[in-house]
Image 1: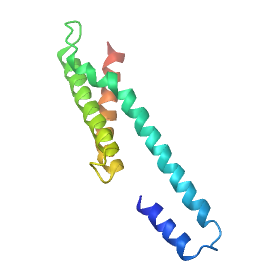
Image 2 (image 1 turned 60 degrees about the vertical axis):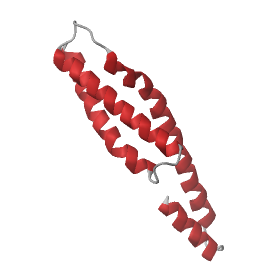
Image 3 (image 1 turned 60 degrees about the horizontal axis):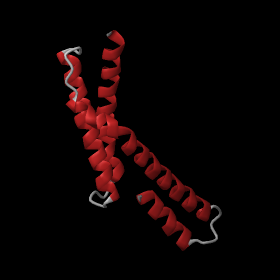
Image 4 (image 1 turned 120 degrees about the vertical axis):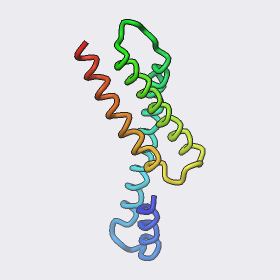
Length: 117
């Protein structure tokens, strides 16, 4: 967001600067692409967040623990995305980045467990 503001300031200060308008539009489109990606992630995590209630005796306790952890982190990421829509957080990328990374690590471990069984 700060980069977009700086580019707009440069474009205002020097409207004759070659590419000033293009840079501004490009950054704006990147911002909208990120918003679309957050929407897709939000929708994709809906079923993952509900997995925490699975309690099946056919799975190991370790697997069920990973499943619950994954569901909690998916819910955290979904809440952060929702908060960014409502303007509760000022930096949506920073608020989503680290929980999403932790969720990704859990998903990798979960997939590894599924491959072993």
